[in-house]
Image 1: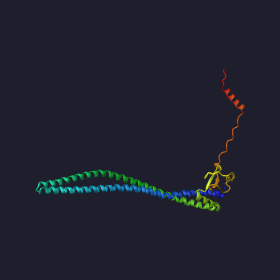
Image 2: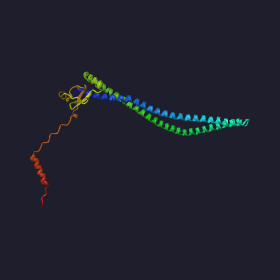
Image 3: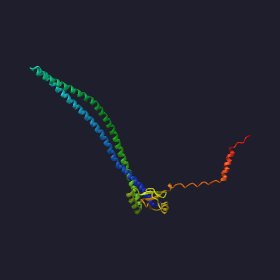
Image 4: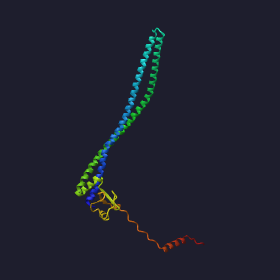
Length: 268
């Protein structure tokens, strides 16, 4: 095989690995960011549950304070009722007492509703805290795996970059320039030729070009896509089987007669 061709085939394999590892390294921070966003959602759920409990407690304290105020009003109104001089004044005080009692009853109903809601909110908080704990462990594990994978990829990249440098130095300037130009345009510069076609763009090659290419003795490019072509004899289709010889009619008839004779059983 042509020396430049052999090295360029190796070079493209290395370039593909470098591209793959580079993409993986650049994608890992995005993955870490995504799992941290998930963790942030769980933290927000916990905070929301805690806020709901705090609001519940604040509402109950306000209602309890309103009940105390109403109770004090009732004491005050009953105290004043002993000193009123007319039925109208007494009736007005009793109406105030009745209104305060209704307010107390309404506050107590609301407190009962809040206590029922509190049970639900506390269960929600426990569930959210449990999910947060589980997610935090998972996030830390994934972040550790991402850091390990990044370190491994970067180490491999260093090795491939060194190999790439050696391969590029071994290729002639003209071949390397063509390789780089097609690589920028097509993102691949090497293609196998099979069945007299470029396997990248599937354009047929001229018979003379195909025969020259099968030796892998020189740099040959595809006239359509510009990629550097190579030939792999391992992918050569097997030769067709030779046609079976036709038997003469007499031979076929003789074989039939023989089979019939074997099937006939003589009568003793």
